Image 1 (spheres, rainbow, N blue to C red):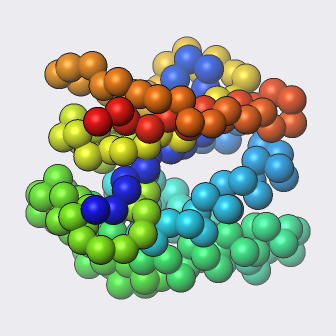
Image 2 (image 1 turned 180 degrees about the horizontal axis):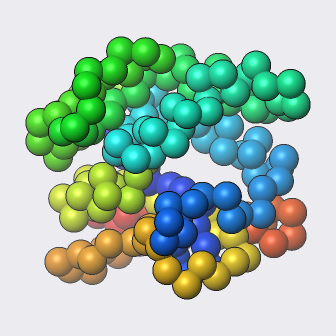
Image 3 (image 1 turned 90 degrees about the vertical axis):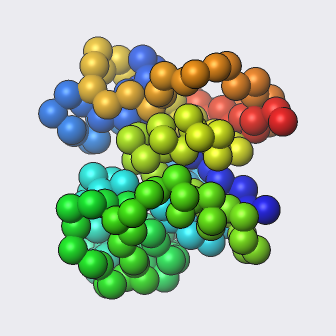
Length: 188
């Protein structure tokens, strides 16, 4: 069975976006970006909700062509284009660019099908899609990268669950002295 990972950058108060959808509030560093690149290169398939897809596809298809792109950004853009992506949306037209397909039907059924197959890691991105996967008990690991900022509201990384989910701390790390990673595995 394949492992499903949910991880994103979030504020200290647990938000991944501001109330108006903004995501440019973090404390980026080359060290953190290189860590994210390493994580993304280990993923076999990205699973996106529509809003995160729109954010990612607005920049990364040509991210390696930007005049100020770093070597890590160039590698990230190329990996992003080459990695298979599944976008879950009932409103998007079929998307075939950048190794992408759209699923308009039951997201949980498709994620369950993908998880039960052979292959490498899956990464779910987008709080709404990840929340559905969490409630269905499909997420195996959480990568929580906490930035030193309070947003006071917005789109939460977390979701309400029907019951508690025991976790085991697998790794912690600090980037640039202020950003922390906490990686947890779900205890079965």
